[in-house]
Amino acid sequence: MFVEREKVILKEAILTPQEAVKKAPPLQGVPTGVEGLDELFFRVEWESGNPQRKPLGGIPLGAVVNITGMPDTGKSLMAEQFTIKQASVGQRVCFVTVETPAAFVVKGLEERAKAMGIKFSEIEDRIVLLDAASYHRLREDLPTLMDTLAHIYRTYKVNHTVVDSVTGLYEAREMMARSVVRALYSFCKKWQQTAVFVSQKRSSHEELSAEAAGGYAVGHIVDCTLVLSKELLLSPRSAAAYKLPPGSILRLFRIDGCRLCGHDTSVRTLEITELGLVRIGKPLSEVLKT
Image 1 (cartoon, rainbow, N blue to C red):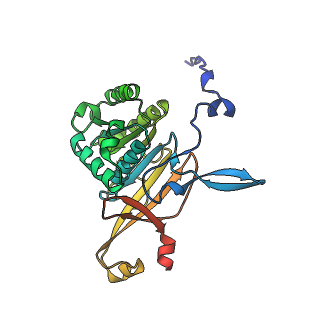
Image 2: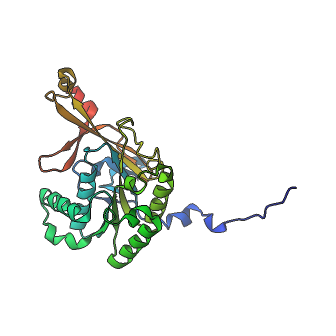
Image 3: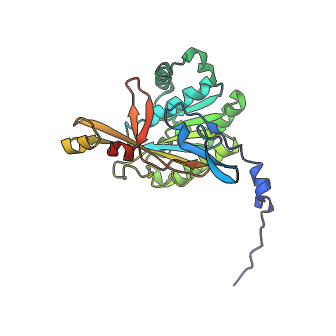
C-alpha cells in the first residue's frame, strides 16, 4: 500500500549568493609561520579590465586545512609553527593535543618559538591547550569534545584551532572517520574558526596523494589539504638527480586543492632546518632542471 509522504521544504536552506556571502568571512590570508608557504595562496582581482593574481599572504581566513603525510614529514612542526605565529600577532589559538600529553606539547611549542625568534613567555597566554591525549573521553566521545571546545571558545575568545591529530579521534574505528571529520568541520565553521587538522597516512598510500587513514575521510571534507612526503635516496643515481649525497632524505610538498582561493599546483621541495622548522622550497621541476 502506497502512503504519500508529507512534503518537507527547508526554506531556510535556500539562499541567494548575496545572502550566503554575508555568512562567510572576508577572503584574506592567515599567516602560517612556515617560510615559503603563505605566498602559494592567491586571490584574483580585476585591474584595467584584466584578472590579476594577488598573493593572499597565508591560508584563507575561516578555512579548515588538513596537513597530511607519513610520520616524520613535518606535519606537527607546521601545526606548531602556525600556533606560534598566530599567537605572536595577537590571535588566540586552541591546540587540541590528541597524540601527546599537553605538558610535552608545550615543550615543543617553546622550541618552535625559540627557532622562530619569538619569546614564548610573551605569547603563551594566547595559547589554550586541550589535553585529549590524557583524557580518553575527549578522544572517544565527540559531543564531549565539542562541548569542551565551545566552552574554550566562549571563555578564551579563541580565533584558531589546531587538532593534532584528527586520526587519533577515530583510531581503531575508521568506519566512523567521515562522520567524525564532518562533525568537526561543521563545528569549526559554526564557530568561525580558522582550523588546522593534522592527519596520518598509511604506508600503503601513494606518497603525494591526499588519502589519509580512514580512506578519503579528511581530504573530501576539508577546504584545503597540504600533503607532505619523504623519500630515502639510497642509490647514487637517484641522489645525484636531486644533487644530494646518497642516504639523504628528499622531502616534498604540494597543495592538494583549496576550495576558498587559488593556489600553487606544483610539487615543491620541503626542508626541516637544523633549528627544527619546516620551510617550503622551489618547485621540483626547477630543482631537476638545474
